[in-house]
Every structure is written in structure tokens, then in C-alpha cells.
Image (cartoon, rainbow, N blue to C red; front, side, top):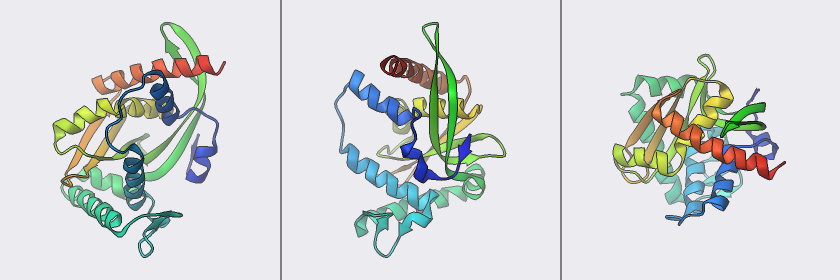
Length: 220
């Protein structure tokens, strides 16, 4: 099931990839690098400017009721400009920006899982930055401190972006996916395309199956 009202999303009871992240942090804690809250806050600003501009007030420097600084807005607008400039050289990105539904969420009731040969079910949800409904696949927008393609690809594994993409693909039953990431350091735009059963998908699925099983066990 798909829905275009993001205000309802965070109040829903189904399991999200963010829920799996919270569980992972409890089960496998590790040292945090940088200010996680500040990174999320700035990423929300960039996401809103690119995918939900109606939420943005450029005169008061706010997104909804969240106040930002003029410097944060300037940086976010520079990153938006970098993405738009990249779209002039990247026909696929241009089509995504033109045609994709943004911030659309999906729910999958009683999604089937298997871990260690043991089958179980969970109600799941996800919210797409971009979804191409006519082609039944979508992708994710990221901000990153990576300054090269190599650093970006390392971030895909380190921050479990592979897990999120496999999670989204399986909720939507899609065979393709993509990530575009804008560097906060130099404005470069990095991209990665994912196909079902490729290395990134398989790695991401293995990650989410373990966490989904632990989530299921904890909520029996």
C-alpha cells in the first residue's frame, strides 16, 4: 500500500528501517563519529528543499516549525544547486527530479522473512525520497561528508545504506534502486545503482534479516 501523506508516517505501528537501526545500536553499540543529531537536522533541511519545498520558509529560515540559521540555509541551497547542475549532465537524475513522487510511504502487511531457516512475518513500512511509480522502483537522497566516490561507497556499508535500500526494495517488490549523495565538503554528487541480487542488495538483505529476526523475537 502506498500513501502520499508523510504526516501520518511516524505515527504508524509497522516496523521501519529506522526501528532496525535503533535496535542495532542497542545490540551492537559502536563509537559515534561526529554529531549525529546535527547531521540528521541538516539532512532534513536538504531533503525538504529538494523533495518537499512547500515545507520550507526561505524568509524565516524554517522547515515546518524547526528554526535554522542563514548559514545552514545557504549551505543547503548550494547543495541543491549542485544536484540540479548534476542533473544537466545526468539524464536519469533529470528524469527522477521531473517525474518521481517524493516522500511517499508504503506499508507491507505481514511481510514474509526468513532467518537461519526460520520463517516469520512482520508488518513493515518505508518512506521514499523518490519513487517512480510507473516503473515500480525508487531511490534515496543522502548528504555525506565523503569527498570521493571511494569514500561514498565505503559510507554505503558503514552507515547501512545498503540495508535500507534492500529493505525498501523488498517492501515495494522492486528490482532496482539507487542512491544519490551530495557532499557537504565539496558539493560533488555521487551515485550508486542497485539491482536485486547484486552484492549491495545481498549484503543489505543479510543485515536486515538478522535485525528483523531479533525485532520479531523481542515483540512476541
